[in-house]
Image (cartoon, rainbow, N blue to C red; front, side, top):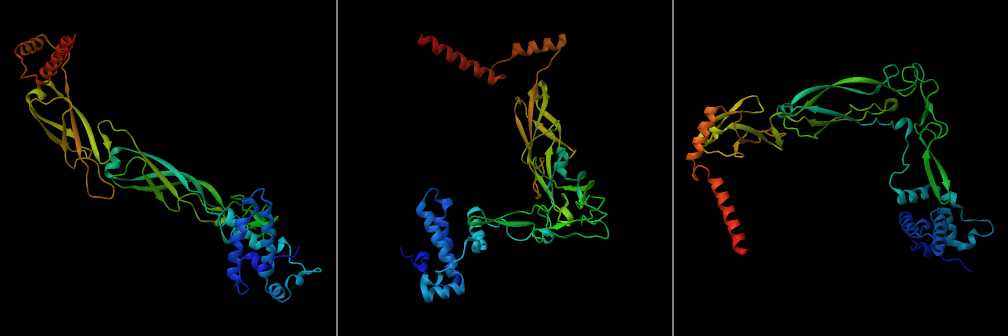
Length: 376
């Protein structure tokens, strides 16, 4: 059975450019790849045809021979090359299937390993969240070794390039049609070998120390706010860049105030007479000052008063939230005989006008029960 024309297999004309040829092959190879068509024999045959055609047409000399003599140019031992000739390009196809950048580029001495990011949980008071503050923290972290300046090599010595990977940190192995990269087993991906490691860090280039850092907490931060300190994380291996330190803030519950965004809420108990006769009360604010609230005559439990701009600071803004005062009418306890007598006298002289909510409620109860009786 005669072979199909290589140009026809790849779906291109004889005047195709190298770039167009590669693009067409990439598209068709991905379409007919066995991994994308499991169990499909036709796809497997098509993929092999594509591979063979591209090996010939992508090589300038082989393409010229093919254009002049056709398939006869590779008969009698001429050959079109084996899968190993395609290792670099098949690595590109592998990356197209499994993700860009997989195994790309050298690591090793020219690509130092970045240190890990660190997390620090910091609890602050509501007053600190209101006003902001500078907090000093102590963080255990990895720092560049002072003995070897982060190189990992003993003073007077230096690392050498890994002979297995040539300093890339990765080695390539052919697996069928694919060329797969993996971490170099000799240098563990570092690209270099230290024959005489530093005694201070045992060759790691970093040591664990406790550092003292100053954290600026801006006014208006909320629970869960994250503050990033660039370059204050773990030092990189052998002179690699440091990671970042992330401060996660939590705000302690307050004894007086409850927070809802930029607003504050405070429950204030008032006496029975103050609620009945009215007056003024003093309430605290988060900045340490006091504010006066006028209580109207006949104030009931749950009545809420708003103090504008007396709440929380708003992050990165000059605006302020509000403070809401909710009064709680306190029922007197442990009455003296005289107090009891006065209250009983007050009760005898009370009417619906002095207790409108009570009168209204029991009026509705009476109507409800009357309706039930009529229905019966």
